[in-house]
Length: 472
Image (tube, rainbow, N blue to C red; front, side):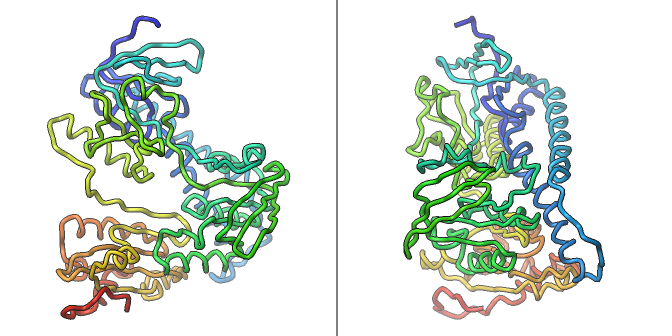
């Protein structure tokens, strides 16, 4: 092993939390090395959040062409050019690359391209992509290696060379029949986008409903949406084995309660979960313990079981959202400066970018019922949001759970643009404000946000000793 190069801080991975912390510490004068074996910036700007939403918006535009007569717009025979869709995505990603490199240069943090792994205490070896190795040493080391698509041990799956979300973004030609294994966020977003581009799409879900962790009314609304858009959904299904090659012809042998069946398509996309990127990086050499699922064990300050080593983002088992990784950065940044910030009990908002969107924060209704937590339910169909009528986007609903002391316990919305509702509701929840703080605002008319006024104006009156409510 070569003589280690001395740094103040080493980052293994340049995901959301890691890159922001690297920029912050380097700008304060620390000598920082950021090790990355893939694209700089992590998954979000390269192969996940932003590229997928770029594709989804192109699909939204395609749907407007299909709905042209609804808006009084007459057009000729249009078609989707997947090469053009992909070119738009690549242009955006290229711009994000330039932004990231500029931020690294401005901060002074050094990028080291290669695979980083521990070889001793406070010591990391980098197997350089260009060939050769470098050995780096620092008193403070941060792990932000992210996660990857899970490939279950299904006979024939690896041989079928399925798409993951990464390869699906690169499609220059439209699949004739895309089969998607998995009915979670990634699977549902891609299913709708590819259907709107013109593919036949079938979702195969192991659970009995789509988005099975959501409230029943949410799952039912998604099921109806996909039915109306011509997407086939196979639920309660176990994939026994797979034959063929994705991109040519692929066949799934499936078992359901009613028996066995065979499903064939041209392409297979696997979206059945995420696996942390914690293998083969030498964690055991330095005393960094992992969970049974392979995630790095951290406390509520994101410190690992080894002194001087922190971890953040997906690899810790935290909710797999970029905004959670960003909050990890803020937690570590503030604590390094002498603060006492914690991840315990923090808000975890989410938004699935189907069309309509599904946004949520706080306590779900099904969990409130399970725990016997009293609440009053207020619910408003999107048809009651006047701006939604002007847009012809009236599918869906918004709802909130209200405590006896008028605090907002949870909020769920399924509708056009409802992800933008979240900050207002979160602000009230974070500061223990009563729902009336939102109800009594003067909200611009006609905006989608006006729906919050209507929603919170319909909260049922308190009733002494009332059990958990599911009435409107």
